Length: 339
Image 1 (cartoon, rainbow, N blue to C red):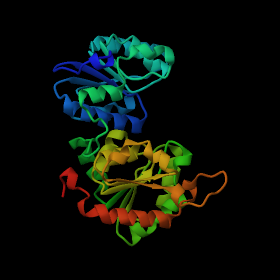
Image 2 (image 1 turned 90 degrees about the vertical axis):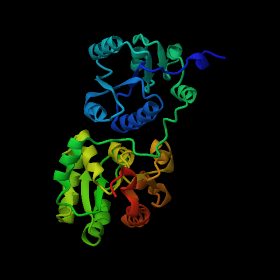
Image 3 (image 1 turned 60 degrees about the horizontal axis):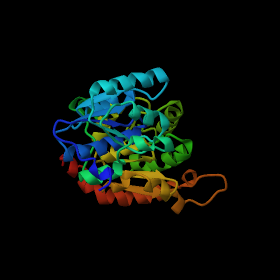
Image 4 (image 1 turned 120 degrees about the vertical axis):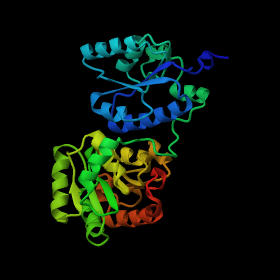
């Protein structure tokens, strides 16, 4: 039996620290992983460490016992986090990052059992097991996405109803932004796709995004559609409020970015737009039964110097979305208990 096989599993009352600083999509996926871990070990006390902007969302998850916040830099901030971790006296530390700063964090944590992987070769000895190996030893399938894994608070759901009350049903959560420009479907195509959905099919549409460029894009789409069935919330929601709004949307569609993870993990039938299959294949979202991906590379004509998502025609998205809606609309809220 090798050292990794001797590490054991958490016992009742053990304190576990799970570290995922950012970004939004990664934090959501890790919270989902934590949910599956806590389902297997309900008697441990689990603390989640992330950057401050994700803290309130994490605190609203019923399987999280405590939340720590901080950043990996500058050094004074990193040192403050080390002191917090040491004060927690954790038996188990799970680090989902693989870089130098987080590896040093693990070294100085004083945690008895350290789970993770380091890319920097001379840190190799600081971890007792990789996360995948440890999960197998613990009998935990952290990648199970067969049930909703993100929860909105009653307060945020009530706030969301105030936003959404004027919109008809069904409602589409339209994620128009992304972390990179090359991941974004153009505004002109969004307008062409949404116009018949709003005017002919009677859908309500919530526009979601963040930052000045996406706010300008949201205004462009809203102005072009000119419909009271469109609610432009681009730049208007923090992550916690966004969780409540998603809860009352019937379906979601959008680019490869954090809010698409939020929708899918909340149990909302979700369709993601990607440039190539490899981008989609890297995501745990593909394990969500109510998630479908549309890869532009399968449909858009090749244009030198341009990624296919830029040239993905609205009619292709409409055709795929209509088939997706026909499959999921009759049971869109079934697994959320809101038929």
